[in-house]
Length: 194
Image 1 (cartoon, rainbow, N blue to C red):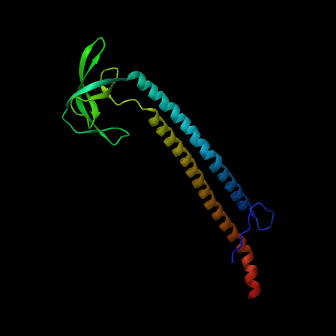
Image 2: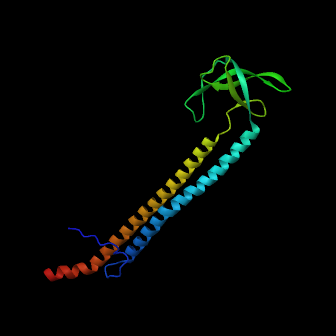
Image 3: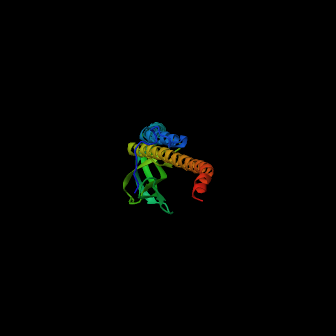
C-alpha cells in the first residue's frame, strides 16, 4: 500500500534531500510560468502580430485600389487558389471606366462563378497589375489569434519540456546518491546477517 504525503518536499526531515527541495521549487516555478508566463507570452505575441498586420493592411490599402469592372471573357488557364478561401479564382479580361482616363481593359483575377457580363470587384496596385485585396479585419484578427495561441502553446511546451528534463536529471542524481549511500551502508547490513 502506498501513502502519499503532500508537501513533504517542503518539510524539514532527515529523509529530505537537496534534490527534493530543488524539485519542489522547479515545480512551483513551472506552475507559475504555465499560469502567468504562457498567457503573457501569448498576449505579447498577439499584440505584436496585430500591430504588424494592421500596418500591412494600411500599407496595402494605400497602395491598392478597388474597381468595379465588367467581366468580358475568361483567359485560358488553370484556376488560381484564393488565399484563405475555398473558392478558386480565374483570370479574365475585365473592362471598367475611370474618371479622366475613359474605358480601360486588363486581365484580372475574378471569382470562379463569374460569367461574362457580371460586374465584379477587382483590385489593382499602383502599376496597374491585378492583385489580391488587402486583408480585412477578420484576417487581421485570425492572424493575431493564431500567433498568440502559438506563442502561448510554445511557451507552455518549453516550460514542460524544461521541467521534464530537469526532473530526469534530478532523478539520475538521486539514484546515484542512493547508490553511494548504499555502498557505505550495505556492507554493515549484510555483515550482521552473515
